[in-house]
Image (cartoon, rainbow, N blue to C red; front, side):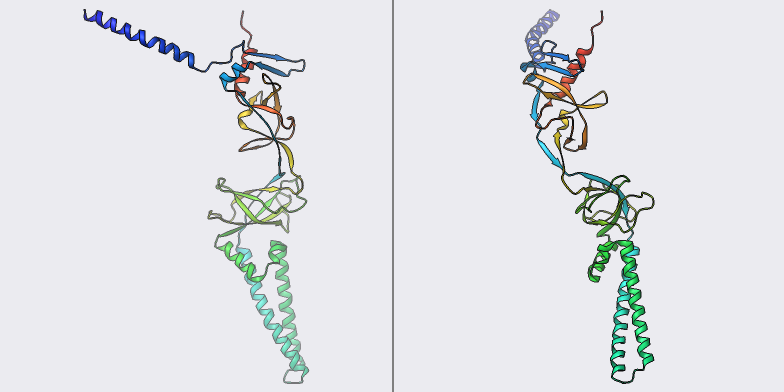
Length: 331
């Protein structure tokens, strides 16, 4: 008797749950059916998919027009953080040489005046003071030339106080100076006014260079166009010898193209593709050749007309349907 009651209770529960289960299955997203999507190819192999609006709604297919954008043309340069020690020593030598020159010049001018007034300065003393003055002047000129040859004219043209503040920032690691080289075969007509620098190990914290100018010498290993970059450390542990990469914008007009969202791009046969909307229910697969792959999408300068409308949601479903209909049923 107990078993019969239990069985009747189970039958009653199933009678209640079964319609709900069937209804839940019917509410799930349906795949594109063969009758809803038709795939065809023209004589050159271009793929066309015709899909009914109801099927588009089921898979959440959405399109968007790609607007024209202009991006600056950029080139990558690679190098390392320079050791500020040699610059610090050279700056100290310059300060000492300038002080010595100031003193010897004053002594020479004093001796020249007194000798002209026939006071207690002999011609020999005057000539000795002049020799010391000229020697100190020559030494300072040589150090200034060394500064230009090794560190560039921009640093050499700094006022002594400004240069000393800059060197102090380098020694304290509040600032950094780096040398980068553009790969052989590429060049800059003019030094860029800015650059974005990434230090090895700190890729998530790019640094904006404060100044960019041509290096006075060529890197013997890379043999490319070299530049000197000055930057603030921004609290990062930047050490001498650390490898860096710099993104340098090229001067002149930017590069024109369209930005394709990542969701619109599908990968097939080793290439990148998008589905262009020809009409409201007809699509074609087009290959794209990205000029740059960026965090916000693919920057395309060719193979894709401007202001074209492409599928930005559901592109993978269209590719799946296309591949599914390529499979011929077995006999």
